[in-house]
Length: 251
Image 1 (cartoon, one colour):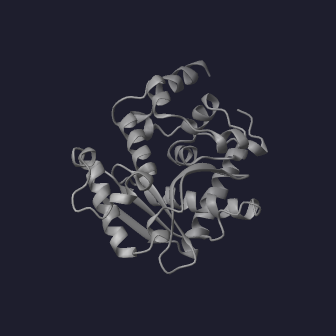
Image 2 (spheres, rainbow, N blue to C red):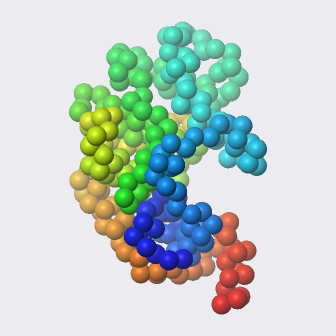
C-alpha cells in the first residue's frame, strides 16, 4: 500500500479500524480502494441491490430500517397526530418505537422546521474525510445543526464516531462555501438506538473538537509513515484474519 496524500482520506469505519488494529485498516484499504469524490457523494443503492449483493440477517435489517427512518416524515407527516399508528408500524416494534419518538418530538417542537430533518442520508467528502450522515436536524432555539447517527444498540466508539461526522460536516462547509445547504455549524451530536427507542444527544464542546482533531491528525500521520502493526488482541472478531495469516506466513 502506497500512502500518498489522497490516501489519507478516511471514512469513519477506516478510522476506527486503524485505532483498533492498523493492520486491519491496511488490509481493508487494499480490498476497498478510495472512491472519487463525485462518485462517492452521488452514489445511492436501492434496497434490492443490497439483497442481491448477499446482505442478510441483522445487517440487511439495519439497511431496511435506515430506509424507513429516511422516508418516515415524507410518508407519515399527515398522520403523525393520530393516536393510533398505521398497521404496518404497529406490527414492527422498532418502527413503533420510532413512531412514538417522532410523535413526542412533534408535540415538543410544535414547528415543522424543527420536526422535519434538515437533511437525511447525506454523503460528504472532504480533503481528509468522507462518510454518510444519517440525519441532520436543526437545534431548537439555536443557530446550529445536530447530527444523528442511527444504531441498533450502544457501542463503545459511538461518541468518537459522532465527533468524526461533526468534523466532516464542519470541514465540508469550509471547503465548499458554494454549497448553500449548510449555513450553520454543528453544535450537537447524538445517536438514536432504534432497538431501544432511545435518543442520546450531546453538546459539541471546543475541548472535544480539539481532542478529536489531534487524534485524527495523529492517525493520518501514522498512515503517511506506513506505521501498520498487528494488534493480536483484536484478532478474535476480525473479518480479515484469514487473509492476515496468509500474508504473515508469506512474509
